[in-house]
Image 1 (cartoon, rainbow, N blue to C red):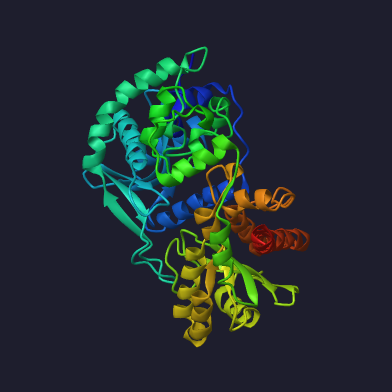
Image 2 (cartoon, rainbow, N blue to C red):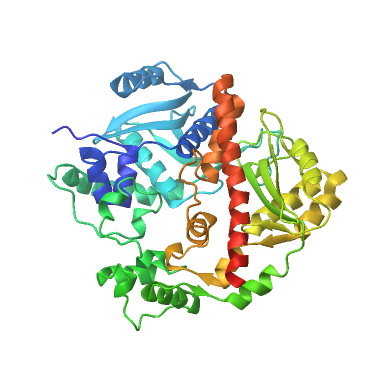
Length: 485
């Protein structure tokens, strides 16, 4: 049997032997890529392209497999001093090195580019496996580095300081020594007729979500120990070892916090726990007109507009349902439809749509609050109005953290979990955009497309999603009022 693994396979093997077996044997279909996942992939490629600009003498190795390997050999023989995506194979491992720099003494520096602001353990292993292969084919690697995003000192439009280069040679060297042992294990796993046994656990989502999780988690019930709020993995692993997965099977003497125990009690009794008085007191704080408000934002690795840093959030859309004291409900919204800076036109619309008085209901108010304070700093002309809105924020999620627990929330308080329980029949299932991450990807697609039909559909999808968020808050508000009379 031909044994060939790529770098991704090796990293998967470090995470879980069972995941590696599924990947190399193709026994389970890999799920299709969602728009938000594709956006992450595209962003990584864009970061890689920007990184190459720092090395103007670099040569990009084209092609795949043996063609790329031969092109790499030819480039090295021809005296190239910097290679991008150089391909090598050694000991059954095929790699593509982001950047290789040759020095006058014929030693090489290996640089791995990451769309991250700090080095992570998986990044070090990434560099280590490349170091192992490069040394194996005869290259003298004098040092290894990570090229990371500089989110502290880089501001658009000056992208010269977009990256920092961190030497990781000393951290990588001991990992390189462990690679032969891992490869022996992986070769054995590669040849197995059936997947190796492996219990579920934290490794199923760390450092990355496993695409085969459904295969391994099929026995886990909906109301499982994994839904208990803020339960540590140490406690989860204790229960896994005991074969306890359902909350119904949780030992009565298992130590939990007060909040965790309240959730467990609600599940085991199959009854919601509702503090009617607490809800009534909270709702009494609201002042008409009541604005139900939500931002949609983007935080690209490479900043696009003046003054923004890498990964800094900027809003491109909002929705606002306004409830008057006579019961009328009005919708106001804004969606930026061009690849220009959306912040100023969004702010100008926002201060018109939100009245100078009245509560502003949001869900998880720290997010909206930070966006409003940031916009107030950027646009001092509108600072007073924006800070007034920020001061009037009222967090609907607090109700479900403090006064309303339901087994069907599955230990969470997000609006996606709360809405279909509190307002039966209303959910996000029919929407093309299902969450904020997908909204980011759809907005990027909308502002880039030149097809008017596609643009119109994406615009509708974004508006449907954002207005659903604020309409959902309004309907939850109605349900809570009815609940407390």
